[in-house]
Length: 219
Image (cartoon, rainbow, N blue to C red; front, side, top):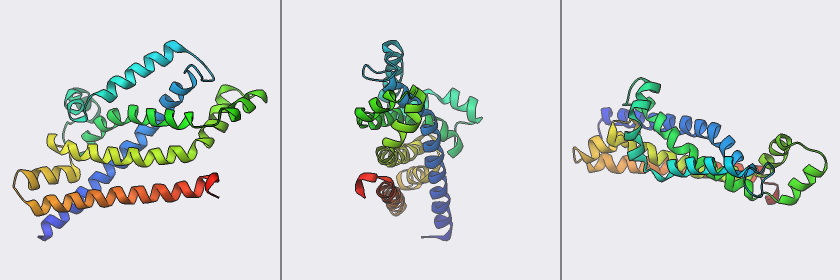
């Protein structure tokens, strides 16, 4: 493998990490409040509101039902408006956030539903407000499950970023498409696949070790 290709792969790895980590952070920034909203307004939640829950659920389900490649193309005008371009790693971040946010919201909702309702009732009996219950009971108690969900989300977003290579996105996906697919360089394709697998495994291992440290049940 030439020195130029090695440098290109290093650059692609950096771009993939940038797209994945930044998109994951932004998806959780928007996804956690949405997930909390879904949980607290549900029929068994602490602030039951069927109308809000239904509207939020429908919007999230609609976004989740659209395949990423179709969503990426469909929101190109929005991507250009936000990022000023529709190609490259920075532009890819926009559809990644749009696609990942509803996915994260459902992961957060699922994690919150695992919290023992008796703990919530105890907090309410002590006079805690809904916001205090969310901040001091729900989020801390669901912490380990949220961390497990984050490793799943990061791996999913990394896969989405690789798909964006078909439409001019950066990162390892673009290298795999441009060199491995269009130029029939099977060696390059294999290297990009290996790098993607390694990145996923590193994220998974980091997430597992972090969960083991914060999960009170494992002590």
